Amino acid sequence: MKNLSSLPGMACSGTKRNRVNPLMIVGVIFILLGAMIPLWTQHAPFLLVLASHAAIAAIVAVSLDLLTGNTGLVSFGHAAWFGLGSYVTGLLAQTLTAEMLVVLPLAVALAVILSWAVGQIFIRQVGTAFAILTLAFSQVLFALAFLLSKYTGGEDGLQGVPVPTVFGNQLASPQTWYWLLYGILIVTLCLALYVRRSPLGKAWLGIRENTERAYFVGLDVSRLKLLSYVVSAAIAMLAGGLFVLFNGATSPETLSWFESGKILMYVVMGGVGTIVGPAIGAVVFTVAESYISSYTEAWLIYFGALFVVIVIVAPGGIFGLLSKVWNRLNAHFERGTR
Image (cartoon, rainbow, N blue to C red):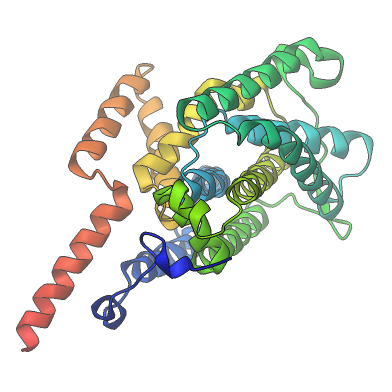
C-alpha cells in the first residue's frame, strides 16, 4: 500500500497527539461498565440475559461499522449474514456437534467463502446500487428460510438447538454465557480498533474519503473493498452463531429488512466510523427496546422519536456527543492550569 499519508484524514496533528484520545476514554468506560454488570444483576437474571443480547448486538454493530464506517459501503441487508450465521450454526449443532469451537469456525469459514463470492458482484456497484443489492440478497435468504422449511422450520424457525459445549463442558449458566459473550465482544473491539489504525484500515478510510485518489496512489480499491465486505460478513455471521447457541433457536426475522434496519440504526446512533460508538449504540438500542416495549405495543413510535432526537442533537452519534463533552472538559482544564 502506497502513500497512505497522502490520503484524506491520514495525517495527525501534533496537538492531538498530546491530548488524551476520547476513543480511549469512552472505550475504557465501556469495558469497565460491562465488567460490572454481573455484580448489578445478581438478583435479576433477566437483566443478565438482556446484557448478553446487547453484547451480541454490539458485535454485529462493529461488523457493519467496519464496512460502512471504514470503507463507506452502506449495507441495507447486513442481517443476511447475521441470520445466515444463526441458521448455519444451529443446523451444524443439530446434525454435527454441539461443540462451539467446531461449529462457529465452520460458520465463519462459510461466511468467508460465500461473502467473497457474492462480494465479487456487489463491490462493482457504489452508493445506492450497492445498498439495494445487499437488501435484495437478504430478502432472498429471508424467502429461502420459508421455502426450505424442511431444514429451517419455516415460519416457526429453527427450534431445539442443543446446549453448546466448550471442550465437552456445557454452557448452561447465564453468568458463564455473559462472560463468554463479553469477552468475545472485547476481543472484537480490540481487533477492529487495531485494524482501523493499521495500514489496511488507513487504506479503507482513504477509499471512503476519496476513491479516485485512492486509485491514483496505487491502492487496489476493488480488492480492498472486497476484503472489507468479507471481514464484515464473517464477524456478523459469528454474532449470528452466538445468537442461536445462546437462545437455542432462531427465526426468519433474523434475516429480515427490519433486522437490517436495526443493525444500521446501531451504527448511526452510536457514531459511524468510530468502532466503539456502534457498540454503545447497540447496547442503548437493545436496552431501550426492551424497556419501552414492556410498557406499550407502540414502542416503535417512541423509539423512532428517540432516534430522531439523538440524530438531531448529536449528528456524530452518542460517541460524537461524548467526545465533544470530553474535549470541552479537557480544554477547560487546560485553560485552568495555565
